[in-house]
Structures are given as C-alpha cells and as structure tokens.
Image 1: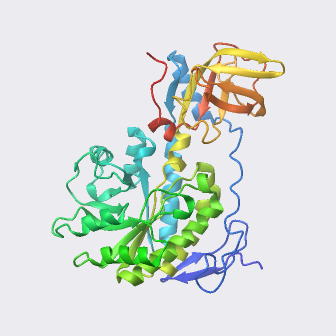
Image 2: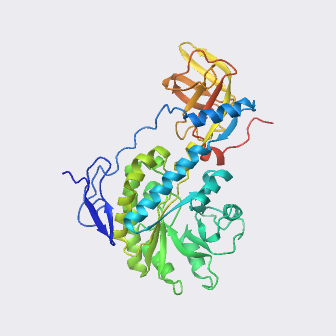
Length: 426
C-alpha cells in the first residue's frame, strides 16, 4: 500500500510518516494491537570499501606533508567535522519542530577528547555525556555549564565529586545507586533529573538496572517512589547497533518503551526524558537512524504521554570521519601472488582496526594525487611485532607502491583516539 506523504498529528504537531523507500507500516513497534513490521529495520549494508578524499581534505593533507612531519601523524579535518555537526543540528531541529519534543544531542566525550570537537559541540548547543567526574570537569573547562552535562556509567562519581552544581541528568547504573541518590537531601540535588539505565539482559549487557521480571520492576519502582516530592524520572539505554545489528536495536527500543511504561504504572512517576544512547557508525546513522528518528519519537510519545525530551548521544557517528592518520610505507612484501605493505602506524594508533573497516588512501607520486584502496587480496600491516597488527585486509594496492610512499588511514576520529596507546616507542 502506498502511503507516501501520509502524516499523523501527535500532541498538535504533524509528523511525516514516510519511510525512506516511500512505504509506511502503521503500528510499527506494536503496542496498539498491531505487530511491528519485520522490515522496519533493514540491514545497514556494508560500510563503503573505498571512499574518495574530498578536495579540502587533500589540500589539508598536502599542507601537513609539506612540513615533513614525523609519522604516524593524526590530522584533524575541520571541514568534515563542521559539516557533520551541521547535519546533526539540522536533524535535531527538524525532529523537534515536527514532533514538539525537545530533541537533544549530547556529544559523548569518551569517544574523542580533542578540544576542537568539544568546542564545536558547545557552539552547536549540544549537551555532553560524561562517564566520570574527570570528563565532567573537562566539559566545564571547555565552557559547558553543569546543566548541560549528562552523567552515565557505573563510575560517574569517580574519582571524587569534582562538579558541585547539579548536572542536567544522572542515569543510575544500578538499583543500589538509585537508592543512594534517593536518600540524599532534596535540598542538595546532584542533578535536575534522575533516571535509570535499563539493562539489555537479552544481549548480555553488564550495564544498567535489570527490569526483566515484575519483581525487578517492583524493586525499581519502590526506589523511584521513595524520592521525596519527585514524580518524574528518565530512562536511558545503550547498546551499539554495530554489536547487535540494526534490527535487534529496534527490537530493543520497543522493549525499552514497554519497560518504561511498566515502571511508570508501578511507581506513579512519569518518564519525561528518554535517552537512546549512541553507538551508530556514520554510515548506519545516516542511512538507518536519521531517516527514522521522527518515527522513533512518535512511538515514544504514544507510549509515554509525559515524555518531554528525547536524547541521542552521537559519538562514533559524529567523530569517526573527522580525523585521518598519515603513515609511511616501511616495506613491500611479495608472497607469491599476494602483497603485504608494512607501514609505520600500528594498532596502537588504530586500535579499532578490527572493529570496522577503515578507508585507506595512497598518495601518488604526482603532487595532490590520492587514490583509495579498493577491494583486492593485499594487506596493510602495522609496524609492531603483534600478530594482530593488521590495519586492513582484502584491499588492492597499486604495484608501484614503494618504501617511503605515503598512505592515509581515514576515519580514525572516534575511539581510535581515546583508546590509542604508546607501544614500541621505548
């Protein structure tokens, strides 16, 4: 059935219900006697193997190389970063306008601590998500107010209380933490809103509050109800679609809405904030999540009538394309018909090499000539003595590549930065 252009009024706002392919299945996520359509969350598809460098990136890389840097060298790509932030800010504003919800994006600090990215988050009026007091302190130093900080994770108070003013929201990682906060003097709150992270037990998560059984729901409800004079709370969940798949993520979203509704009924308090975390790759964010964000908001509003705010925590999906790593070829090895290229970067510089395929480009001998490595049988190996030090496999390397040539490992702007470490440097 063709329902392209169909719309639905929600809380006075008109929300477009078109799916990206022009079809819409009413009652997605169920809850109204209609089953969730099985094709709601299509396969993300593979990440592109070869991504060409844009002109502004080439110009910046050539400028850096003209200074003869020691390699490996990380290069920030500000034009990409600005465009990424602009697109996400536009998405946030569009969904807010369409649904009437306060849609907020919170930059996940743990992804990359580079000040340039943090400054852009502040300039775009993003919130920040922190998992420790040290991260919260960094956000304050970068110009954020405490009221723009969301605290998450099991060690959000570590190493000690460093931000004294109430933060925007705290999502408790256990019932014990929620009970501890409930006993605090309400005259001295740690956050404007207290919430809980729901544990995705079916996916083996070790984080959050278990609410799979009615007994568990009742325990959480008692803790929520024991807060003096507080009749509202927030709900958070986070499970990377890269780990469980996009379709399973949408199933989990449905489960979270149902559990949140059960907690409302049991506690008598209203869910006013829903934080759906992050973990989306840039490709998956763009082709799966962004086109469906309005529908996710509509579903949440239908299930949780008191909902006022929807929060996303883009980390990898925002930061990954914003940095590239310049590296030089150390050796070219021919193993029969197979080719191996050893470079002076390593998995210490690209610790996420196994997590996703990084685009790699080789600089031609003509100035400004760059080519992406497409599909093939060659491998690019790191400099270390670790067997696992493989930067990328199954690529095609030009037969003219020689020691001293320059390659760029792209999309290293996310956890490749915050997880990098010194290795083999003495």
